[in-house]
Length: 299
Image (tube, rainbow, N blue to C red; front, side, top):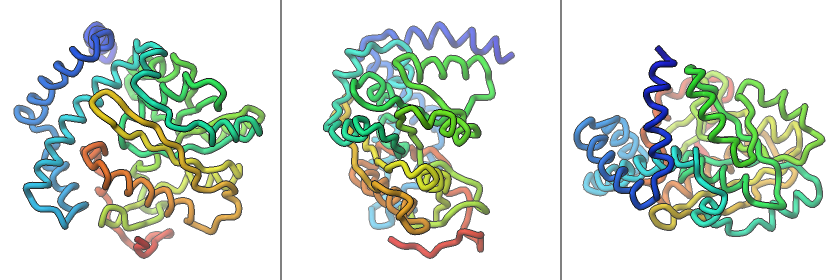
């Protein structure tokens, strides 16, 4: 059955991927009507997340952000499919790398780094853009393999066709150890939802939130500088990527310092353009209890 679904869907996926952007966004407008008005995909989840995250906003503002999010969500889906066939030239045109000096500096010193991103902006296009930038690190992206092996192979191809490489999440540490002699940038999507009993809890967007500790622990273990990356949308179909050094020497940081800082930095971005974050994600499905890494809110 999984093969049948894949081979039925594949021609449509490729068709979408070769559409010019102006047609792609007309398709996205139609998809938005279906997703938002007809299907109502996770509208309650999104509204609940927004209300809890922004208690200071009126209901009218919450509804407006929700609508803008779903419009962007549909763009995000189709832009991600576009990475299947997008050219290097188009990636460079659509995503401006504001300043690569920080990355170039570390690369010239043969210093590997940790990249931290959130589900804010188009992280898939950002990865493709990183892959075509000369003079910077070999990018390794951590990913969750899909259960459907056919779609998993397709997504693997999409994410590596422009030069990037992948680590399956459970093999990240082993892969990084094996590649220690290579100058790498390992990208962590830091707003995943971890198991609550192994998480560190923070106040994030006005809510008790479990934070994945693996990013901090790996950064300290390898002592790789921690760089936060923003993928800000300038206008429809165009983005700016900005790099910001959070910690040059992670081994000198105190416990939880890295987690607190990158979480706060992501919240800054979300508050600046809330419609760009993945509000359909059930980020707060766990509730705070007295777990091992329990922590009072810090910001």
